[in-house]
Length: 74
Image 1 (tube, rainbow, N blue to C red):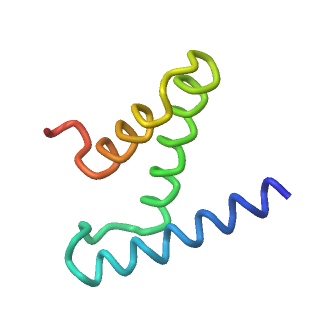
Image 2: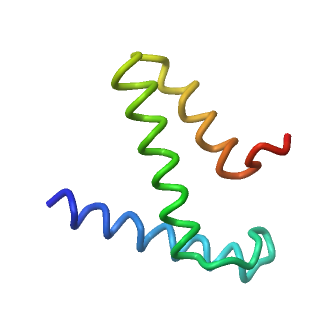
């Protein structure tokens, strides 16, 4: 069940990334690789900051979105 849900999440992310690429809002890169990158960042931040440290959800979510959209360049 978890694997299937992950596959659905990745597929949904790929679809949104492709839309963003076509619209010129996202760099033209491999959407599958981008999707796995996003999910990896979110999974690691969730594990470390929510599970291990119990940080505020909004703070972790903001960090994940900021990092995925802007990387280290802001």
